[in-house]
Length: 165
Image (tube, rainbow, N blue to C red; front, side, top):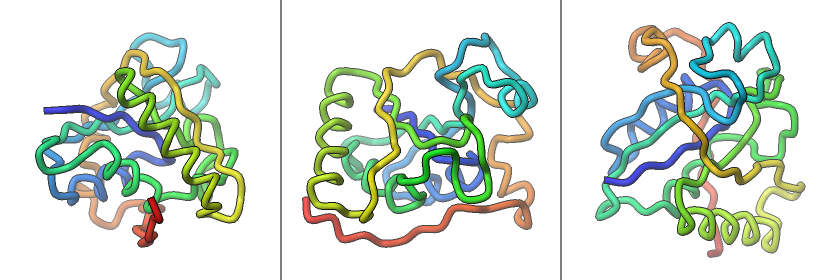
């Protein structure tokens, strides 16, 4: 089993979409990248402590590659938005790939280069590539939030992109 950690806005919708992707074994939402240990949702949303709302994905690499996860990631959010995602504005909602090893770092760098070379989004990519730090699991009420509250806030939609690479 492998893991990937990604951030692209409010983690509720991201988790719902990734849970339905074949090869995903488990997901959990949480916080990563900041200075506060064991941050709470309220701290991440009100104090700029550097944490991103993120998703940790456990996946079967025999069924799903890290590159396929990146392709899906770039089809469910706007990687050109600098200050958040859609109506969610703030550092915690920015787009990021958190690499867990050298292989993921190289794949992430190559993927971002290919997006730029092929001008897939017709704008510069704002997604950053960062070394993963401690992932702090969010409070239980955030886990599988949209399964618990199907009428909850969902700002992510899948938009098919035919990547030429």
